[in-house]
Image (cartoon, rainbow, N blue to C red):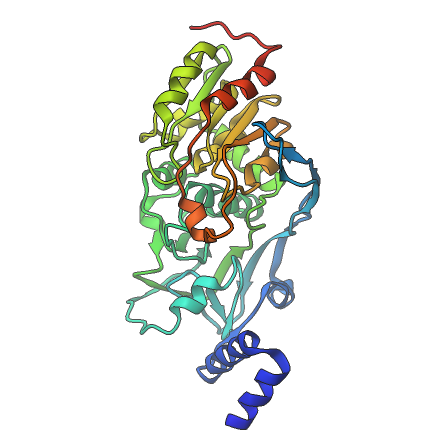
Length: 387
């Protein structure tokens, strides 16, 4: 065995060797872990619906502040195909791991990546079993508060996928839905809007679902497809019709990580430009939709609230405030997809010594004079009267 391990290390390197040994250990326990491509191939006979994804050009975005440094280089983004599968085989049952991965014929199905599966599978599984006639397996990542578990993840990786499944399967009413629940007010709001009864939600961290019929689907990761977004919007539109008001300029405040440390100075300046401050507090989904539906210009520190930009009118403008050490392009992508305008702003210079996870939670300091100059250039042709 030692000789075999040394040969693997020499041929593939330490990291790849450890990954192979990990999968070999799981095979010893009777589990074969599939990646995305192997999952698609294995579940091909059970395919119910396929979305072709979309391709768009993300334009170059420069810092709106001094220096005009390039924040996002121009690039083409092609989203993954999306799928809905319905597995049924006479005499066979599937089960769901704590992290929400479906196990079908001893294969670990990759619906959202296998990160949480590998992290959690080694722990003893003491959950009580719940036998079900059918189960929708919705999401397979444990919420860690950093990489997974926020509002953005729920909207695009959970709610939008559920809408895709509801579109593909004739009648999902009464079918149990299993995943590691977020246990948030917005989760409860969305599930109610999508006609999901609370009793049909199963938290896989505490209960082990077993069923002969498994319905599931993949995700397009951090770049949701236009089809998924439109499906979500159509489902929600059946329940919510936002009131239309005069267009507004809004500032989205944050009180947790990535908040603006000198926000009082920023807000004082924004008063001159008739911005309405949206405080960071609990709001229903209907309230959030109405705020963004009527926003002509949205400004604020990068955060999950901007997921609501999908409810904006075409032509609305999103301006993100960044730390120089963390500048993801998720909302720049959504702006192109939603036919919106986009700009970005940061003060200072990047520190290469700041680790990725530290940059992700880093608070933001804004050069107020620079920001005002930038806003003047963007807003000059447009006038919104104070209300």
